[in-house]
Length: 536
Image 1 (spheres, helix red, strand yellow):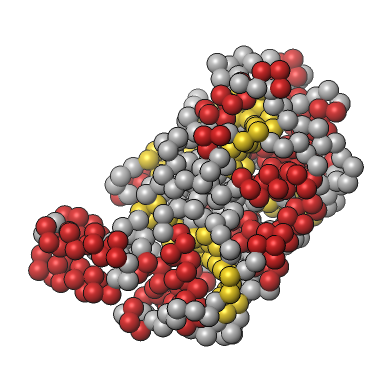
Image 2 (cartoon, rainbow, N blue to C red; image 1 turned 135 degrees about the horizontal axis):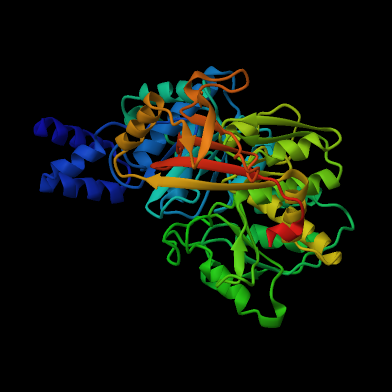
């Protein structure tokens, strides 16, 4: 077995086009490190609806140029088999290690397969890539990014010509084409032939589109502290704010420039503990010019986080939950007379359904987690998910967009400020009108993925009858699907209210994360509120 493993590694090494991973793999082979080699060659990274995502390194179980070239060749074959021969594929990338290399390899593979390739001119936010697909009439798009994953990771996100991320069965069909590639030597990769887009042609067009989310003449007086979290959002967001007439955001200096090491945060995700500490410190240091709100993007700027003043806390600021921002944006769009379908996922707050039900011309729909599902809802006007993702302009970007979401948050904050109110005041109004929808998430990060499968199996075999003192009135195994939802690995529990009437209902959903080694539990409790004074 050891001999077979070494031989497998040597075969991979012979085809590896990257001197960095060749050197890494050579060291492992020379050292006879069968434990590490066994981990690298235990299978292959699986291509699914999230594309590819994993740790950088040599071997088929890591993200590297060999894996990316195979993925690109599989996607090219899929496109040609589905009538898109000769079509254009747009390729974007972030500022992580190897992202530019992966993007160039993808462009070469597409050209070698007879497709046209258009490469974005520099590391840019994922929403710019999603916009460019529809703007340029492309047949597909690829964004090389691991979003908010740790620095050692990278990823490969695939969109089709409608500007939405892939869903079944496209993922399985692409995976089959990838598996059919026996050797990298069979994949043509010319050294030229793709187009590098001019910045004005794509970023300029995207910025022109961002104007569409705002109302002409609406207030613009709002002070913002902003962090791009060492990612690629700063230049595009500040340009969008400037175009719109907002004061220039104060950018968190320590996190302003793209840096693939993400040196100031343990995880480059605004939701993670400590990730916003520097933004809070920047806001506190402003003194009399204290900001009205803090806005953060994740590293590829498709997510948007918001914090509001909270003088009663040590930090002086409170991060809003994704569900709170989702409800605020929905309310703002309703007040702007938005029409169409308002959509969120099964793990997000049920508050959106109540806001939509009370809004003229608004419908409501619920989907599985992920914008690959949200973006495909008929008549979509607005979509959000609790993980800080918001789609406020589906005709422009059929995906979550942290830039346009930030603009809309700033407009709402400015409108409220003009009338002497805040985002927190509006949240209090919603709690009085619809009940306080308190949400939270418990996540268990694991090294051994089998622990997640074991936990899900136990919950199915022995479903709970009481959770947090509330009786479970229904338990759904979502692997069976429902009338409106395709099957997914998840469990949903509806809970009754308490006898005292302090809780009118609750909900718990348990599911494995689709992008990280985590088991996630999503909690919601609805509490009747008679007046804002009850909220403290």
